[in-house]
Length: 246
Image 1 (cartoon, rainbow, N blue to C red):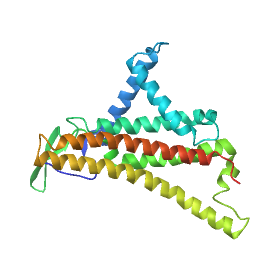
Image 2: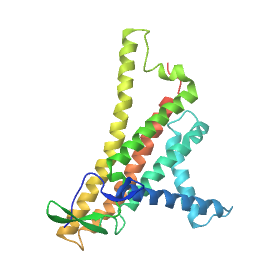
Image 3: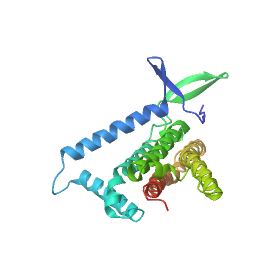
Image 4: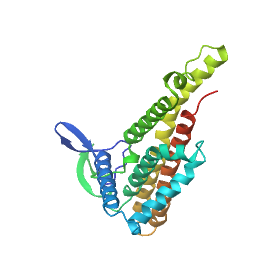
């Protein structure tokens, strides 16, 4: 029988460390990105081929999208690698997570007297551990880039200020907002991707040959939008962090 679990299921142990199905697919995502990057780098030409064309369109479109968020185009190009990495990682994770076989191929285990399917692979974004870790890393990067751009004291001066009671209160709100960013980043991505997987499972159960097709197309679109939203929010917060505060 099909079993819907919020948490990722353990697939095997690696030197005593439990490896779950979401972590396993995240390794595959990294391997795919490394391979694609190597192929583009190895076959880089003045007259681009199909794969290089795709990469150039994605890079140019994303760079144009974030350029207006920064003070100059040069500044946008400086922080573009971080933003593009986040976008491509989330996008490929979302799209590989809806491939045929992901979530449906696995092995059976007995839970509470019932045989349930434990999938070998699961979308990384449907695991809250992945989205929370990505959110924490993103917020830490935002603050690190802010310190590198304007200095330690100027950057953290927006969190701790004793110039006036109002500045002190605003600093507390800014500090709380950093924690809220992590929660917002992680639960938005997790909720949308996990809900999509549940919809696909339910649709496949009731009408396996027709109903999943439009939902699958919708999930391709949602996976792209969620990756774009995550990257755009990261770009906005980075652009605010690297500006001098007045």
